[in-house]
Amino acid sequence: MAARIGLSAQTMAEIEAKNDASLVEDPLNPLVRYRVRPDPDWTERLGEAWNNSLVNSRRLCAGTIALTNGLLTIADGDLPHDGFTTKVNPGEYEITLIIAHMGDKRTDDYEEHISHAFALLQPKHDVVSISSLMDEHGKELGIAGRFFAFAGSGVLQEVAGGHAGRWTLRVMDLFREQASDEENARSKSIRIENKEGSSAAILFHGGHSRGDYPAYRLADAEDRTVGVMLDFFVDNRPW
Image (cartoon, rainbow, N blue to C red; front, side, top):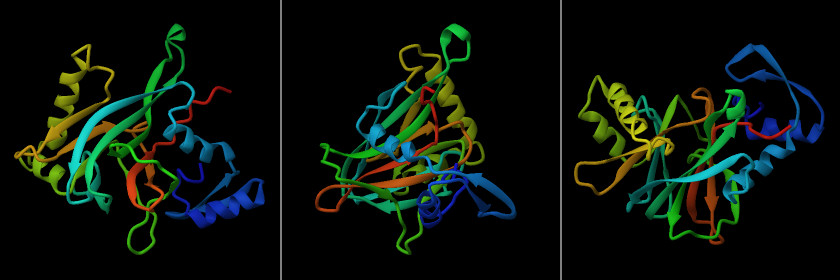
């Protein structure tokens, strides 16, 4: 909950150090306060998502995007110009989605939500650290929206430009077309190439389609950025 409402890493560290419930102020509204407590299992879940060992989940490949210039854009799928671009090691990146299973089909409350999304350099490198993704000023990066995109720099803006004023409708149509195909209905994403076919954007719905979600940097032993992860705060742990 502390991360979901947008608390800084420093504030979260202070909460964890207390090992008890704390009252914290909403970063966007000083009149609102939350009672939060540490959740040591959540940090562990980041590693489990990476290691493909999360319970009640499955892992899907959504395709690849070429980042020959080493620039990865993470954007709001509704608003292609809302997002950020970060430097990564140049190469081909595979987009991997972790699908969380919630509820039970026998009780008619079964749902699936994307809990984590990765952009990973191919061939896969050994990841030795997962840390908050920062901009050049040391600010933690994240993204808000209903659905999201991993793309080469400028690619999403290019493909959306041909549908000015009706981009969201175009994307909804693509998702509907895919959902009507039984073979693709469970893939949860769509891939759109730029005109030259040199790169692409991969769009997907994340979490419960609401919220402001943090981004994490995946680094190898040489401290190169070989991946980026989004955490959508989907809690499907068995209690």
